[in-house]
Amino acid sequence: MRITIDISQVAYRGSGVANYTGELVKQLLKLDRTNSYCLFGYSFGLLENLKEIVRDLPPHPKLKTVLIRLPQTLLSAWGNSLHRFNIENLTGESDIFHSSDWIQFPSRSLKVTTVHDLVAYLFPETSSPLIVSQQRRRMEHVKKEADLIFSDSESTKIDLGKILKIKPTRIRTIYPGVNSLFQAKTDNEDRMVLGKYGIKGRYFLAVGTQELRKNLETACGAFELFRQKLTDTDSSSEVFLVLTGKKGWSGILPQVQNMINAGMVPDTELAALYRRAEALLFPSLYEGFGFTVLEAMKSGCPVITSRRGSLPEVGGGAVLYADPENRQDLAGKIYRLYSDGDFRRKLVEKGFIQSGKFSWQKTAAEVLENYEQLFKKAKKE
Image (cartoon, rainbow, N blue to C red; front, side, top):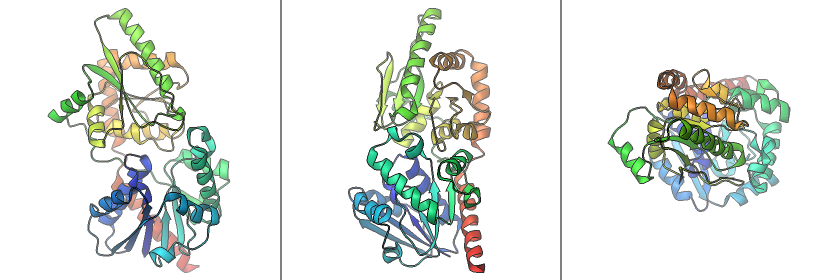
């Protein structure tokens, strides 16, 4: 097979979509030495990021790359709005074209795509109107043209059926994996990371883009209630809340005592912050998958999260669930993890077992198997 994959999203380092695309391609190239691959990518200001990531990929006997310096707005107009001029005019012919998250280019190949979530339909207020518009246009083309859709979770698969009326036979749920950077092993560099961000003593960690969907306002409010209760029982204790993540389209970030806003941090430093945290606070209102929960469990960090979207699929019975719209409930769960060391250790052990169910090697093998099944079916027809 000749397989073309749009890798444009890896230019935006640190995002879930970038991690998904980069890790999937890396594992496919390691796993599959038989089929040929073309990696297509575009960017205007971040093209060097794409080139650097491609240089770091494993060598492959049948690999070519097509990286072009063009702005996303122009490519969106071509792919999502006009929807003319097949991608093969840039990449050459292929048997399968696996499109990325933002643009659905017209193609003569068998069309495969991954849908990570349906935020543009369920929580449009958390993204810019331009992104929402482009995502909805893309999904209309996916609905009409995609031969096969990969969803990150059963939750997203159900949403595709309910919202876009896409038949479940066209969708395969394939769970993503977790980056090997996230592990429980600690070292002296962890202390250097804590020092860099001015973290002293015990702390809880909240990770995510500062936008309404991530529900950081509730996390901050619950932490404040927890601190009040802690002060009443032990006035000598001082605990911090550390936030990481970029500012989103509609972020609301209240100022509370003992809060450290670290902003965007590299994955190497994020792994250290997970390892040293009392727990991850992740009361999200919706997730297409929930990389953050998986990363925390793999790092030996207990998790408090919600039952919304795909999060129960990721967390299973290895996390502590709280009502994301009830600060008192969330504060009570924070206090339990802080004060009950035995329970915390049991949750860490369960997290290791649960996170072990997810790997990029498994993800790539399932993706490749579905490519092959689609190709064989098309040849018979």
